Image: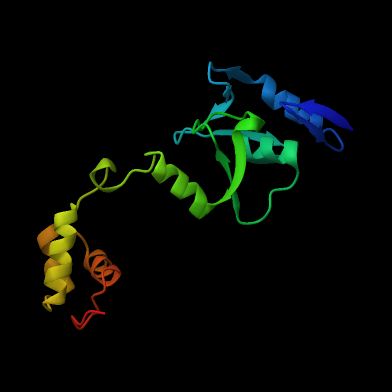
Length: 168
């Protein structure tokens, strides 16, 4: 069975075409062409839907219904950066790394003090690394910054410090 999707021809089997139309009918189109799903929307801003007894993010269902099976290890990404959008023309496949790089390049990825739960500044991290390089115990460093010793150790190790204080 073939049907016209948005700007493309979609070839689908069984009643996938009807499921796709059903999801797309539950949207409001924005002035930017985003089709915002009006069903269940989670606290993280992504919409959820159940299709063929499988609950998943609505944009993943739409991509699956309009393009076929999702390859393992790939995310369904939004060109429009609108988490509620399920417009098939706004969706594309990418690796998790590509998706995160896209988010960072568009300023959508919280980093440092823009992340609401951040305790440490860049200066704090630098001081942790310096103190660890000088041989100070992770437990003492952690107590000073109000973090656990595992976190202090992880920060030091990620910045080239080894447990005995010797750097890479």
